[in-house]
Amino acid sequence: MHPSHELLRDILSRWGLPFTGIHPQIRIQGSPERCLYRVVVDAGDSRLFLEELDARTLPRKRVVAERIAHLAFGELPVAVPLTGLDGSHVQLADGRHWQLTPFLTGIELGRESYWREAWRGKALAIFLHDLSQVGRDLGIDEEVFDLRGYVLRIVDDAKRLHPKVHAQLAPVFTLVEKRLAACPTLPVAFCHGDPHPLNMIWGKDRILAAIDWEFCGPKCVLHDMALILGCVGSEDENALDGPFITAFLDTLRCRGLLDSTLEPHLPTWTLALRTAWLAEWLRREDTDMIEFEIFYMTTLADRFFKG
Image 1: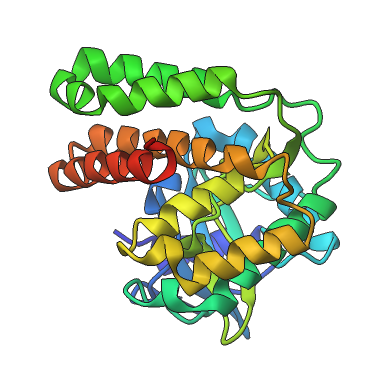
Image 2: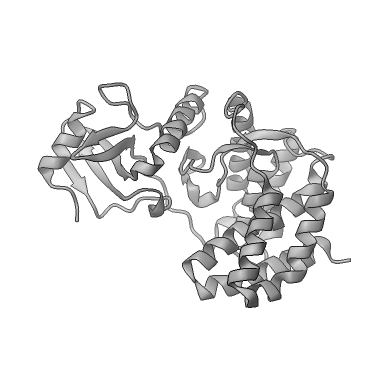
């Protein structure tokens, strides 16, 4: 059920904007699970993305909005939530919490073919480099994400709640745990957290904006690189050797983001981060994707570490 026009007028008035149209038919990129409701609206000549937020997420949403604003000031391609008349990124109307962001119309990513496009890999590597520079002072007081601790929790949950899945992946889990335990302390950087190519709004030859920053924060410098490597590699059996990944890695090396001290640990981080996807499929009870993740994690383990 979409809000009434009267409520939409009230909501947009908190930003001093007129309500002139609603577009429920427009497809919105990013995860719909990160808000209670979302829709594209018009405010005069401006097209905007309206979200209703869960009150429990407000502290985090406000932090993320401030960080995005900081990154935009450093000219990183992001879409910054608008501040209302009171200067806040979140506004209260009808007892509900709302956020408003400029809506960017991108070109939909071709899931079956984008891994063949080198320019996208280069663009995403440049984005990570620029993020490392512009976000240098962000999240310095926040606890660094503990990937090993996270993996151990997921493995323990799988053992208790999904013993058949755990049994199939037990050799992979053991490998990941051992390699993470043996990994030296690596540099930390402010990371997007989930820079999947689907979380980028793409133009004809560049990234228009990175979206879905909910997982941003200080993490191992390999985090974003490894997540991209694992996600793109899952699109096709040839993707890990394809033009996107080749250009992505070459550009990371050229920009100094992936040097000889870090690159040997990239496979470990790539495989370890797949546990997050496994946890998501288990939560959703998505049988097909659980089976795929078992296959993919086993394939990555064989490719990266066999022998």
